[in-house]
Image (cartoon, rainbow, N blue to C red; front, side, top):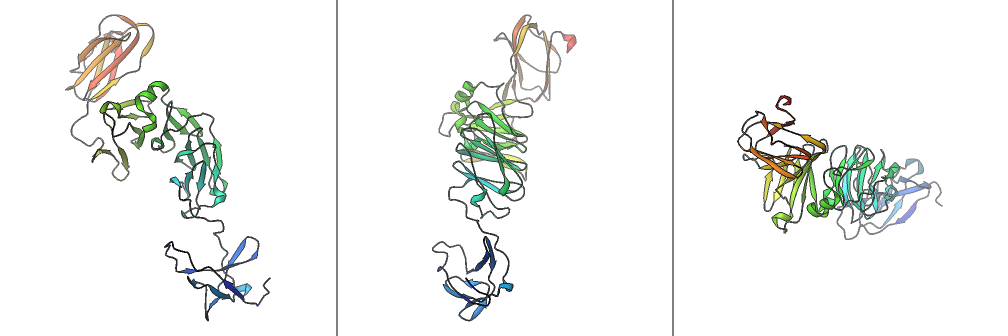
Length: 373
């Protein structure tokens, strides 16, 4: 026990070791009660009294009176992040989040070098990726997804979502603003409002999804409210890799004939850049139009008669319309104007319509008579 008025000889380590952290001085704190450390402001180093002591000095004398001790040490429990910290994201309020294995970690607000052990949460499965939505962190794992929410890193609440949609590609996880999308074995999964939803369940069945789109290889970006995904490996043949665009708002899924090794969204010029081989290309910035092939969903029900159609487009230089009835193609017609035209006669229980070309189409109308157009 040290009594008031006494001085204390202190022996400290030689310094921070071989790691170059650019540390030149250190400070000494003493405790007058459990868990509370105050700054020693009068440290005598061979006759020089100061608050800061040069690194390398190993023996000093504390001459600080009790009533002249300085600020309370705030960094008790602050530790450096582990070497295998991954997937760092930043929440509003300056708190960073990352993960290692099954452990979710948070930093001190605005102090990204401090990751207290008390701020760590454990989940049941290895974490794959993180995304931020408002004050919550969306956690995609190899099993169930989770959501962690709160305003302080010391009081974060972890909630496991009941739908078992595993994330099988780290690079497929995309922050979409108020939600996140990622690739699961069954399709694209959206996490929003504390709920998980399989967004492609009415578009692609799980077997086709796994076979055609290789979800374990998907990497993606967010641009203009849409999810741009690319699948396959660069070494695959052209028919084994590709891309797609998914719009969460409309539920439309568009396949691309383009594969990109990586993609990047630049917020300053509102552009999406694709790394294709050894070149960088901007999406939707070229003069030439890419050809497309769009096919509607299958309209199924009681036998129906569709006898007329009309297509409205910005131009009619390259546009072909096809009709499928009961899984048989019954029409292929170049479209040259917005005038209505007749379809081959006959009823069908399953109808599907297709557009192909480069012209921008604004509307496709199909009816049972010309008058209805």
